[in-house]
Length: 100
Image (cartoon, rainbow, N blue to C red; front, side):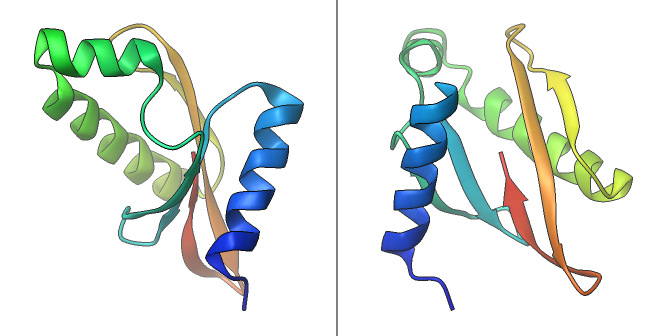
């Protein structure tokens, strides 16, 4: 079993290599860990100033469902025009969660 600290270390290393924020979600879409923690400065601004946090959460939920339906990576544009990607994580045909 991987511990949360190890997951955060892995997400940090992937962030340092790619420059993209990464988050790990369980099979019910609950966020387990993310690096960097919290939304990006752009998303934070949209959430706080424009009141669009609920729309962001809905878009994320829709993307997770689409990735699950496809059984693989799903790259899409969020409602604010940013490109995002989500990939389901399977073990022996069982959905364990998502990398976003």
